[in-house]
Image: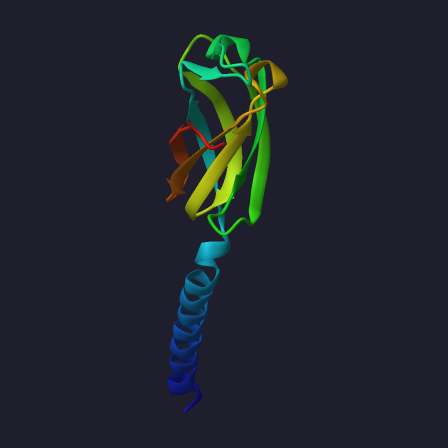
Length: 134
């Protein structure tokens, strides 16, 4: 009788372990963070407060933050603008789902804010097309 119950106990324990792991993955899947590299697409110029065109290479250091569409802060970052339309790369760890990147331009560019939406589905690269908000 003991020889018959031993394999049955092992089978029950294995099934229980697999079910426990599957439920854990389903519950915590949305809470896992992914390694994302942001590439920020900047406009060629912005207008400052006086209406003068400020080219993107004059933006200098950019600081920004990533949040959910509901406004929950997810991460902050810093990078530099150049003549290239793409700023970055910016490496971040974010949860899967929709996000909004906001970049505050320095005073030389009128202190304007650029923003763009992007999705995170897993590890990899995300391009964010930044547009003037204010």
